[in-house]
Image (cartoon, rainbow, N blue to C red; front, side):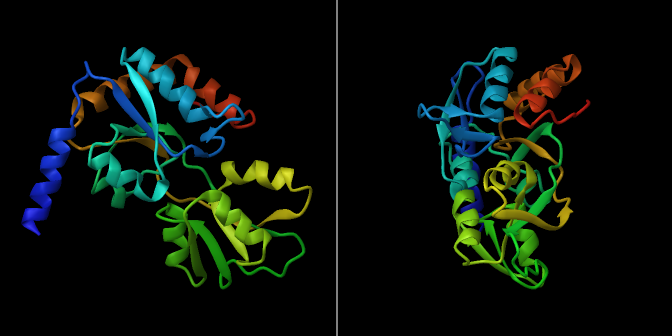
Amino acid sequence: MKQLISTIALAALMATPTLADTIRMGTEGAYPPFNFIDDNGELSGFEIELGNQLCEIAELECTWVTNDWDSIIPNLVSGNYDTIMAGMGMTDERDEVIDFSEQYFPPDPSAYVAVAGADTSVRSGVVAAQINTIQSGYVANSDATLVEFATPDETVAAVRNGEVDAVLADRSFLNSIVEESNGALVFVGDDIEIGRGVGIGMRESDQALRESLNAAIRQMKDDGSLSALIAKWFDGRVVEY
């Protein structure tokens, strides 16, 4: 075990960039409106625009890298990229493995969605959630039966085809899905507050990068540009810093 920890620590140390290097920004590219691939095959979304602005303020040269959600933290630690901006909620469990920047998006209520007219029990039924998310952890500790999927789209598809009774995910992700379903899907049950909001994930050894990005986040909070960006991507949502 000590040898394993030493190996992980060495890998993290070797992966540490200097601020003169190109900073590789990791994201999933599959969780609108936070991050997604647009009709032109390009990365888009709130976090892509925010990340680009933060890099400009911090005078960093940055590039984007996409990675599947289920390996997004291990591949950060191993050095495939230098940050995670992927709608990642800050939790104590994740804090044990990586560091986070200041919050750049407030805690987003988690919500259940089911097929309209179905007799759905979110407390004791079968609930889908994306693997390794705060929602999957919540369902796992409840009386419901958890079914995990690799992508958020698969969780919604499982509701549509009757494989599960409901899906639990960020309300911001589910809003457009429910709206565009033309009444086929509906919110059920109460919203749930989980986590401490969303921050940029970084290796624990990258303190200079963390300080640089935190300063940029604070500048955007102070000048109102972060609030404006949230309103742009989240249907006019008002967040004051």
